[in-house]
Amino acid sequence: MRHSISKRLGLATAAMAGLLLLLVMIFCYFQAKSIMEEQIEEKVQGALANTNGNIEKILTETKILTEDIAWAIENAMQEGFTGNPDRFFAITREVVSGSPDVNSMAIGFAPETFPSKGRYFAPFTYRIADTLKTIQLGSKESEYFYDAWFQIPSLLKKSRWIDPYTGRDKRYIASYSVPVMRGDSVIAVVVSDIDIGWITRRIDSLNVLPGAQNIMVAADGRFVANTDTSELKHTIFTSLADIPDSASLVDAAHRMMAGEKGMLRYRKDRKWKRFYYAPLATTGWSSGVFCDEKTIFHDTVRFFNIMALLGILGLALLYFICRYVVSHFTKPLTSFANAAKKIAEGDFNVELPDSSLDDEIHMLHDSTDYMQKSLVKYIEEVQNVTANKERVESELRVAHDIQMGMVPKIFPPFPDRKDIDIYAYLLPAKEVGGDLYDFFISEEKLYFIIGDVSGKGVPASLVMAVARSMFRSIAGTESDPSKILSMMNDSLSESNPSDMFVTAFAGVLHLSDGLLEYCDAGHNYPMIVGPRNGEAFFLDADTNLALATIGGFTFKKQSITLKPGTTIFLYTDGLTEAENAREELYGEKKLEVLMKHEGLQAPKDMIQDVLNSVRAHVKDAEQSDDLTMLAIKYL
Image (cartoon, rainbow, N blue to C red; front, side):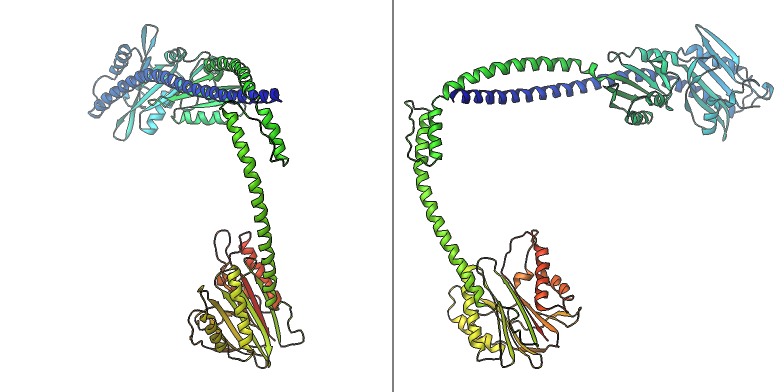
């Protein structure tokens, strides 16, 4: 047994330590990965920004130079150019000669701008190696004003970068075109061309990550540069089409085209890869880098593997140390385990092993000894409490049976009579309650009462019993409901040390003509339910004081004549104040709506419908007050 405990404790300790170590390793791995991700993204985006900045610098200089030439020509043409048009050949040559980043320049005039030059006049200078060549660009075979570099700024009347295309010198170029205006008309377009070759070489030199694919794309998605030369003739969208689940990549390409900066993680050939991209603001182009995630995090994975190996070795060493230490200190626990087993079997006087040292084992001996004595005492107390509880519950059950026996509970109560139908229901919130109802017939009059004693439980049930007995006694000699309640009030008020009160509604129904005399003592107003559906209203009653509040109070009597088929529905506040789990009351409004559909129902069915409606409202909420209903239908 000792070896089993030590082995288990050793394993548990080692497992906890191993779990802690594993959590630390996982935390370190993800922290290192997060830091590397930030550093790599900064590195890639920094390299992209640096390359884009160099390209932007050349493009901006070209843009400014072209706009200056266009502005000078526009001013000259506005003032009325009288010089030799051939002067424009020299201008293009001087610009290309003085600007090594500009590969070629053309000034294309609108047709017939200079009658002496005919329909076509477009001085053009381009660079071939270290020499310059100047020619007339336009002809019947080459109508330059239909080219994109002339058409786009002419139509927009704005300067624009033209997406890369193959120029007349067979070079892949990007052009910046500026319209020359005279009034509202475009009379010429000045265009400067940049050789894409140096951009490609710049992109090729971008070696941010090993094995990465570096690209630059135009605003329409065509590749400006790509380290994978086989894709240069495609757009970025066609090159992505063969990648499974490429929707996210296509979406990233659209964001790239929109001039955004960012990163996308995707899966290709069962490998995780990343795509970083950043815009060139001047041209609307974007540069990007495709790279293998495994290559990026190679150092992090290597670090984690080393940490895992060290952790396994440390865990094994920790296990053997823990097992030895635990085995040494758990030997005395065997005796305590045997003693605890006997205590569990009911032998509370078993002798406990002692320890000669003043250590935790000695403390365990003292604690277990104290527990033995406390258990004996506690079991005796539990037995006494259980006996007392069973006695009280038995007495409450008897009290409940007595209380239920005091109210009428046989229905129909008058089976031989055809002029009256009665049904009642009483449900205490506890074993006994303070609600009451009663009725009897004397001299062709139905005497009835419903009441609610303040409070619940045994005290309320005692007052309920007294009030019910008083009603029976007084109503036997008095037929006025107001006098019945007045006499009950005086009697209850004489001795009321607990200051409890009773709300009540008493009535006398003349069965011969339907005259109902009634008196309300602070109770809920009954409902009068007509003989047809849709007829239901609360009875208009003067609210008198509740019983047992002030002796000598004069109660007022009222009367109403009931039509045959009319039902008077009486209830206690346990109905309208029934709460659900959200503490929402059942309420009088819901009761009134229900009663408008109960005119044709018998009293028993009517009470059952109300009870079902209340239960649907309350659901699983605990009953908070006594619930009593009394329905009397005059036939």
